[in-house]
Length: 284
Image 1 (cartoon, rainbow, N blue to C red):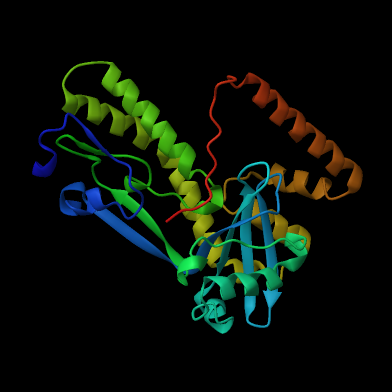
Image 2: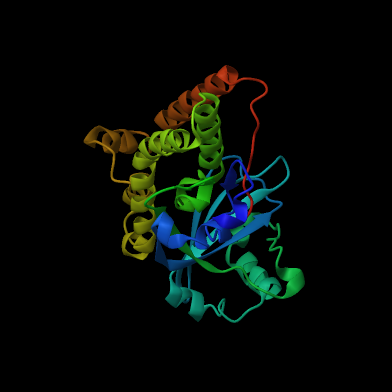
């Protein structure tokens, strides 16, 4: 890109709708596949201690959320539904404030009386979107290189967007630190990250497809539904289903929870003290 000819390197990390990438989309071989479901990124003072899914059946059909902690006092709260439910609940016509009020009513039992926050409320707009799965045939163009959602997107159901962008940054830094001409360094960076991303992107695609079909699973018995949700990527062997069945009773479930908590504490102790915690509240 001639506009950046005076720069040694320009990192395009400006999101799924990257203007830097769009300026030469043909060179990058950009492809965007748009999902069918509608979703919106919100915040809430309700603190969810772990990644949580919640489902509600309304007069219009099913609507659900993906929630996880943002910091000690707030959480990210992503609401998703089919276009038919979105329209029937009039979420296509309500502004941000009115839309939040309607969703607060729908998810009142999950929010514990807390409110939902949409930063667009002050402007009267709304943030409902369709997920865009962005892929690129190549990630560099001379001295411009793509990173994060500008290079690749993964569905919010697996909650890895910020982490993947940070991992991109570390891989790019490693490739540049090795020395040598810029072009081979950018090729090394892309090759390394594509290989690492491939299984996660397959899982994210499977997860997004599952949620587009969620109403088909909603009438399953609760035990089968919860297992279908956990196995939405289609990766589990038979023994995981047997384990799932065995932990539906109180005592085995408590034992499993204790084991998982112990594993989390062990992993936390192994992390460097200086490791940054970078949560994600909003996305595009």
